[in-house]
Image (tube, rainbow, N blue to C red; front, side, top):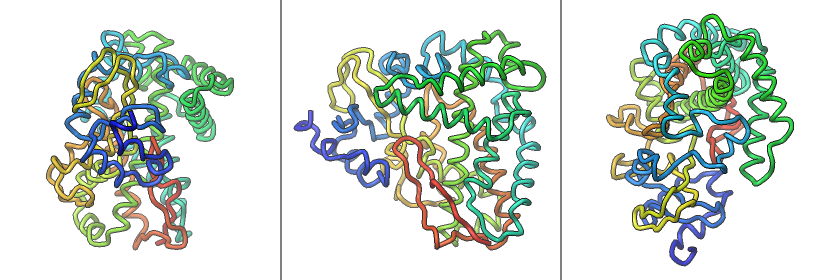
Length: 383
């Protein structure tokens, strides 16, 4: 396949993990669906082809034994298609609607964000992943799942163990015993807390089985921490590198929701999503065989110049920024996207209000990185 897809044959894992956007642009222009030998899958980079894959769950499924997350935490809405997927997802539809999310979570998010910024305000400097974005994401997801009494360290341990387990399975290994133990611990706490005001208690009341609730809790835990932490860090990184647009957002907080969408477009917190071909098919001229892994580059699709003029520029006024695919699309569009948006808006608004003259600390230069999940691994700031 390397002779048929010469651009894909040149790509390396290191290049795509560090700063993939120039490489993705080359692929999108010459091979919008390309076989990448080093990664061992088809990589989709044009927005049109990405939409085709994401909308067509019959041809491009997640329901495959190779899907690594399902091996670690069991079947969930993330790894099922068809009626089973609908059944797993349905109980979360109403609680994740924008109005319900705002009513249920806005006061809690605001209180947590204010407490976290108050704790660091006097210092004049901080690393915001550890001091703000991570703890905020953990607190909100723990409360939403009905686990408010579980300390942050325990939640982060579950999360990091699941991440390591998925990485091990993706690399061809077995599910590590630590991941199984973490899943068992999560299950114990979920079963003990299936009451009161929580999304999981609502799901049980709506008819979702207890085992399915635990698997979906693990997926929501993973997404609620990884995605939201990345969204907050990426948006702050974009704004703090552009004094003019930061000044506009400070002067008009109504620009902040649009800035969130533009940051998601430029640097989606989850950069790729995986699918598997269920039949021989042709996509953008590429002959894909049944069983082939097909990965959609959300980062590539989000900078497609056919939809987004001047696609590498961050612009808080971009009229169509919300056409990005950062939350995927089709039947597997992220169910909690409005909670993630709300958390990012409140979190960043609170940071900008509480920490005057906030700037990046040039003693610690950072940039988003990561093959699958992209964000600054640390964000050092001063004020």
